[in-house]
Length: 188
Image (cartoon, rainbow, N blue to C red; front, side, top):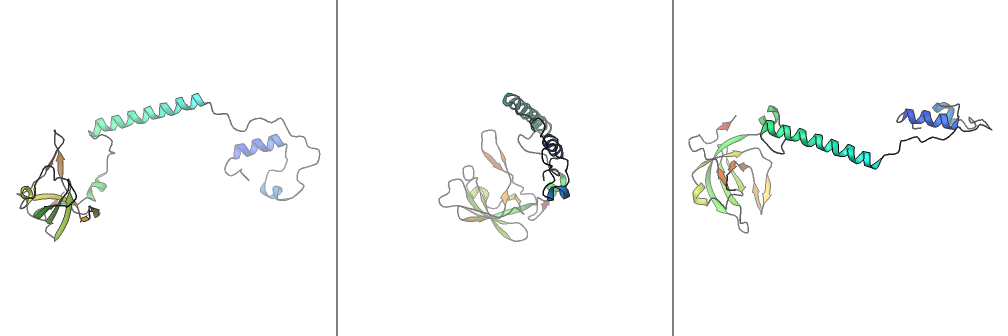
C-alpha cells in the first residue's frame, strides 16, 4: 500500500518478508503468502537520525539563509524586506491629497484624524504623527496618500489610506508635503 509513496521502502519490506507477490492485485487475494516461507534477516528500513549531525545541518542551513539575507540587504539597502517586482509596485496608487481638516482622535495619544480631498472625493485617514504635528501644521497642505490601501479601523476611526512620511535621524517622522502638485495627481 505504501509503494506509490515510498517505492524503495516497499521493496525492502518485500525483500525482508520474502514475499513473492508484490502487486495490488496479488495482495487483494488471501493466501498469496505460501506456508512455511521464512522471512529474511531484518534490517532497519530507515537510517537513525544522529542528533548532533542534525543540529549541525540545521545550523549550516540557518547560516546560509542569514548570509543570503545579508547579501540581499546589502544589495537593496533594505533590512528584512524582500525585493518586489515592478508589477507589485504598480499595484500601489500614490495620489496627491489636500488636508481639509485635522483633529486629534480622542483616547489616542499618537493618532490624528485627517480629512483629505484626493481629487476624487473626501477620505478619512488616521495617522500616527500626533507626536510631531499639530492639526494646524497640516491643514491646507498637500500630502501623498496611498489611495488604494485596504481600510482599517484605528481607535474607532475607519482609515481609508495612509499618508507618506519618512523616518528622521532622531526617531521622529516627517510628512512629505507636495504643495506644488495638483490635488489628485498620481505618482508613477
